[in-house]
Amino acid sequence: MPLLHVRGLGVRYDNDVLALEGVDLDLDAGERLAIIGESGSGKSTLARAIAGLLPPAATVEGSIAWPELGRVARNGRDIGFVFQDPGSSLDPVISVGAQVAEVVRVNLDMAWPAARRLAVELLDRVKLPEPALLAKAYPHQLSGGQKQRVAIAAAIAAGPRLLIADEATSALDTIVQAEIVSLIRGLVDEDGMALLFVSHDIALAANLADNIAVFRHGRLVEAGMTGEMIAAPVSDYTRALLDAHLGLDA
Ligand SMILES: Nc1ncnc2c1ncn2[C@@H]1O[C@H](COP(=O)(O)OP(=O)(O)OP(=O)(O)O)[C@@H](O)[C@H]1O
Ligand SMILES: [Mg+2]
Image (cartoon, rainbow, N blue to C red; front, side, top):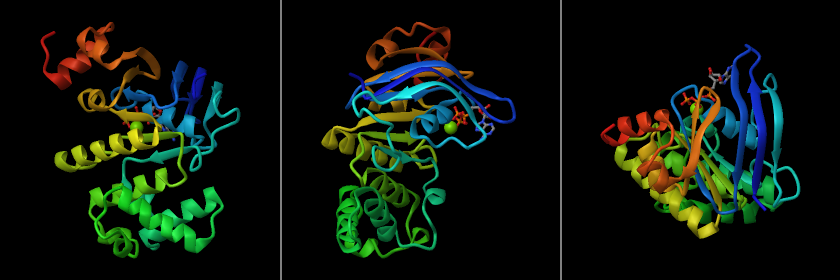
């Protein structure tokens, strides 16, 4: 029984852009799936549709079911969502410890002092130095990589079944990007979470994911196991992406 079962998913925005069309996708518990495609291919639309984060003006058809949960998954509780820009996903006027604690309090129905303690533990889990001290800091006092670690701590705070990272490392420099990818891999392994890793970078995705789904113009072009797809892509489009990112011969 898959964790996530998507059938015939279509999303149209109010400007009449058809952002997704006829998408079928299954995700097993603990599976690491990368969603790949160029800008505008519908990757974020898919991620947001799954997390219930589409704007109200979006029209959705098809079905998104959670067979293992037996109910609709809740963002924050069952799904942790990490956005591209850690600066905009954090509130500038609230200390980072309080922001993580708030996720804990709301989703796990925990009292504030216990939530604050758990927040410090979570900041430690995402390998931030001196977490008790850092919990009192505000986002502008942190580097981009540190802010993204806080955003990841908030995303995993309630022990979600699925972590969605939408270009979560794209705004970071290469070294910090590698550190965040390694952090995500470690957390997903430790907690047995499923991972939906959204990226335009097939090399980065291949490094992290068991399976890859390639999107183009809102449609699923090709899906399969990472090793097989890299070795022998079926579609010309996937081959072109691989050539561009891995420098392979056509
Ligand atoms: N809120 C919105 N309102 C209207 N159109 C939108 C909205 N969000 C996305 N779109 C359009 O839907 C299509 C898919 O966009 P989406 O953001 O899902 O692509 P993406 O693959 O995530 O791209 P990127 O790699 O640039 O993040 C694009 O044509 C985009 O312009
Ligand atoms: Mg996007």
